[in-house]
Length: 253
Length: 231
Image (tube, rainbow over all chains, first blue to last red; front, side):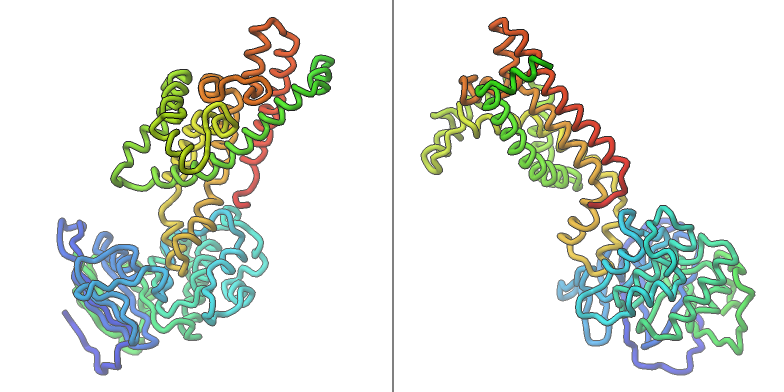
């Protein structure tokens, strides 16, 4: 594992997770341990079936690990040794699904209103709709939105729930290049505005990872095969939408 | 139409129709409550007793109504294993009474309410509930705000089918209700009684009325299924 990190800020979000899974390379144990300092955006890269989406689902509490520990600040979300596991609804996590997972019976505005958590500060529904450029389409239902609009609505809905940790599962994968660029700019805006404490972004696109993440972690068969900080001065962002190979060469790091 | 007017002018017919409406309303409320609960439970993956509940709910679809009625009569009769404790502990007499009619309509229509609801829950993408969980919603909020609005058409369809079956129910009603004039004669039994006594005019008028009600329900159902999801 290569690592050229020069500083080790105090981790805000720390986890260590194990779960046997069927990977592209056969049965194996997902075994990932990572620490994220406040404000960090981490890109997870790896081939399909490497365990990236499974990791997000484990962090969100949608799947149960065989062993593990998750901590956000002083709050313990999971401690398998103590038999502690917070249900998904009590984890301050926001997951943007690859399939959007929009509620078909709710308008764009209602999706955001529904997502709000009582007592949690988040931008208003109108502010979020304006942020993602959907303020003119607030009363539309998901069936009347394009793929890019659905993706932006899914992101706005997640932000409306005031998550401290944002998980993005290939948020730009289904978009055409022009929409990818606009969505990338939106994600950069969200990162810069510090709406969330930290984020994990699953992407196959190295250009996207270099644009959006402070750190890039490569996963293969459920294990970390590369972990390094993303220095734009050393690795200038690639032209956007340049697909990375399935297994990234060491030169990418 | 004149037969229909004559029917509605008759006090005993109005009483019979009012009784039928009360039974239909009570059984529909029970179908909504139990249809949702059982349909949701059966849509969940394997749990102990699931197969038994599935069989018990489905049985009235395939079991002859008279036999179902006789079985219920044995169970809920004055000295039956369920009827006796109900009478002694709660003072509830099911046989030859209004509750007996409601039970007959409920049992007859239950599988038609449960099955579409169960199927709709099973076909709902799991990711919707998962997304709601990540937004901090608890299981009750998810059921009420996400699952229920998205199975609305199946719920309405199931309830209308169950109501249609309940309105047409004769076999179980005859056994549990006893066909007592003025007390337990519902519309379908009234048609049966009218035919037996040769009063074809009355049988035709009640049939016409039942047909109009069920057709109206069918039209409402078709319109509802084209409306946007939600409440």
